[in-house]
Structures are given as structure tokens and as C-alpha cells.
Image (cartoon, rainbow, N blue to C red; front, side, top):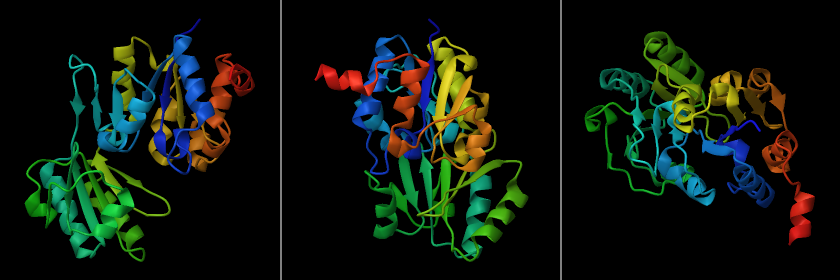
Length: 278
């Protein structure tokens, strides 16, 4: 039997819209592990916001956070942590540009430390931060190290212009992603970072090749992962670009897409069998 590394994006993929893992998906993933397959998470979230799902699934693999800018193993100190932050001067220049556009707010993250440009309870609630910011104030002055990720909340009327300007001035040093509704954010990380780059390190640790990976995703930050994995699977709710990058398309995150795909692909017990076992 071929041993697979099953890689899961979180939001819009593994997680239902209420941010929980469905019972069927949980049980199917448990069956996959019993059959000898491995499971890993690759997400744009920081570790503090993905830790609960890592623990719920009982994982023992490295985790890819910040879209590949940070890869570590929560339970194995022998794994060499990978951290590739933005250059501090580049980040400061971007902050200057954003200030000139009078953006609503900015947030910088250095691994799991959060720095806010303007302390705003509403902004904090948008991300359900489980930690208080390490500091707030002008990010250009507050930051002492290059951020793992810079998150910008632009004004809707100038968002496209700002995104275009940042890409033009700093295209050699950054990767820029836009978030869709409901928040319409710009996320900026160091160029060369993406989930596929992070997964190469996870695959090496797990002693498998990229061809052995079955990866599930739904957004533009999953494109490299979906196209470079042996089997890239887009969710039914995925963006058109994600579906184009993937080899297969499954049902949506609300319709047990991961479970349905893996039950068939890996010949696992179906939910009907689970029901009989109760």
C-alpha cells in the first residue's frame, strides 16, 4: 500500500463555516491514520490559531503556518524550525506606504507575537485573537524584528490602488495575497514563501516525496500546494484558480468533501459503516 501524507488547509477546507471539524471528517482522518497514512496542516494562520485543530486531530507531524513562512514541529525539538520573515526595512517601507493611504489598520506578527498599529477592539474581534498584542503603536517604530506576516486592512475605495503600488515597489521582496469577504485584507510575507515550500520540509521529515502528498485547499494561497502535490484536491467551494491548479475537485467544506474523497481514494470505511458501529 502506498503511504500518503494528507495535507489539510484549515479555513474553507477542513473547517466547516462554523470553524469546526465535522464528525465524519474527523473519523475518516482517524481511519486514514490507522491505515498507515500521515496527516499534516498547512495554513495561513499562525500556530496559536491552529494549535487547537492540531491537538484535536492528535497530529505528530510538523505544521506549516503563515503560508509557509514558518514551519515547526510542536512535539519534536529535533526538527529544525524554518522561519523566513520579511526584511525589516522592507516592512517599514510598506508601513509608510500604507500610512500614506490612511488604511484602517495594520497588524504585524512575529511568529506568535502580535503587534497592532492602532489598538482597536473591533479589529481584534475580527480575528478572535486569543492573546493580547505584545505592543501597539506606529508599527514602523514598534517592530524590532522583521515580521513573519504583515496584515493590512485597507479602505475599500483605495485597496486595489494600494495593492498595485505595493506590488510594483516591492515585488522582488514580497508575496502578497488578498483575502476575500468578509474582511478584505492584504497579507504580505517574504517572497519565496508558500505552502509548497513548507511542505517540502514536512515531506522530508515524514520520509515521503511530494508525489506522495494528497493536499486539500480552496483559495489562492493554496495554488502552489495544489499544483505541486502528487494529488491536489480543490474543495467544491474553492476559488476558480484553485480548481484550475488542482488535479481533482471534491465536495465543499460544508458537504464533507475531504471525507468523501478520502473514503473513496484510500478505500476507507464510509460513514454508513461508522453509523453501524455505534
